[in-house]
Image 1 (tube, one colour):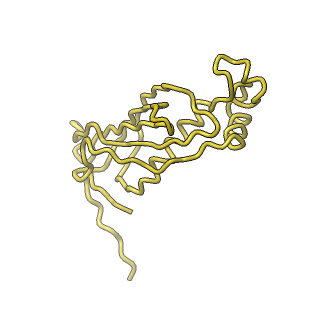
Image 2: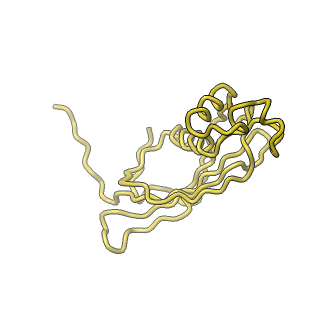
Image 3: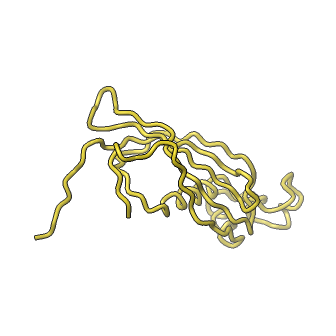
Length: 153
């Protein structure tokens, strides 16, 4: 795992994940629990919807994007997340293969607490056709202080 300090977080350097295959069974199970609309849970009923077929719930799409971003295997000294600005651009469907691209688009040291900084990451999700399906900016507080690692012994 690559560990970055606040100063090492690179600006405007996109990192892309491997693809994730969206399975109908997983999508509908998630939807039945968290967003039980027919366009998410019933393939026959979804055919009559404006989307002409089953689509993923927004929260499912966000969850997959977040999980993909974590697969980048980068450790950031995060204190807390503070904001997500999210844009849903196109539906995600069963059978789609989606990948995330993440990059730091801004960072600054806090004006009031110099031991932390404000970092904004932009994450974009694309399907196998290259269509952008989701974009979100996540703002987080990150420690600017390097904490010494504890050693056993």
